Length: 74
Image (tube, rainbow, N blue to C red; front, side):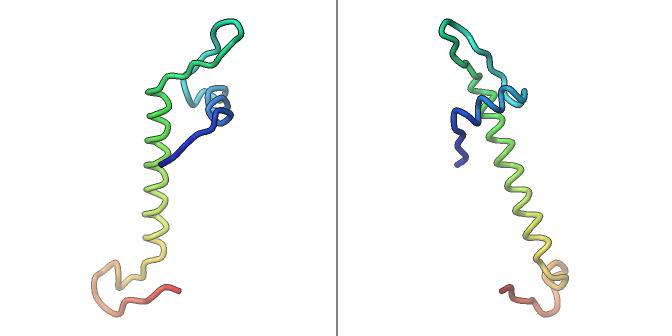
């Protein structure tokens, strides 16, 4: 599971990648939970797609076409 530190969340808010605001005195950050959940879901999906891309780049043509010898990785 992906986790974010407080500093990472603040940086994401400042980059407008998460919805949040500083409120109160002393000022404290408030970040929408749905915004964080959406961000983490997007990051997990991107990681999944990158893993599939790396896997497809490592496959040999016979593996892709379902015939011929299948090479073995290192």
